[in-house]
Image (tube, rainbow, N blue to C red; front, side, top):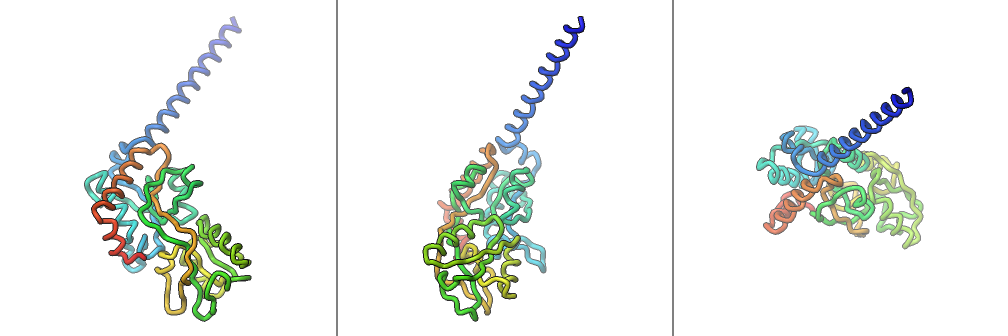
Length: 266
């Protein structure tokens, strides 16, 4: 009799775990497979940069967030809701944008996110909406003219950005031995350049132009073309489709080029 009771208990536990497992799997699939949760919530949550003039920038005087990628995100919100104002922005950095998307705190990332084969393994990327190249900013007084002139110098880059790998590869080609310092945000890198802690600020050229001043210059060299794309979670295919359709329509209508011109992106 005891054996029968024990076996019955084991069977009940197996059934319970089986249904619990099925429920969990179904929930994960549903939450990431369509736009229902976003529409029910009533807002599209987007991770954007707050420190990149022209792309995503929070004005310290007005606290207003504006830029090319802000306008692009509003266009996606309009596609989903018919209202571009139904969007909620959250500041991200190169290091935090992936984890925030993974955790579901944002629905998509529009934050100068370079499309790479490695990143495609983790996220859905839209078709490119802008193509840039990695550049180098130095002080005018340094006399540095090119990457070769940065031999034995320190280069500041953002954490988790692709700039470090791109410049390291190019530096090896010209026989330039460089070292890198990683920073959380672009203002930190610019401050380090101003104070002399580093000799060069490296990131995509369009980002550098937002930080140029009378004491600095962006070198003419361009490295490793970078395609920017909007990232969404794997499995959230309906959102990815809506994003792609938005970008495609904006390209065909010329609206994307108008936004690039509006923000003076080069």
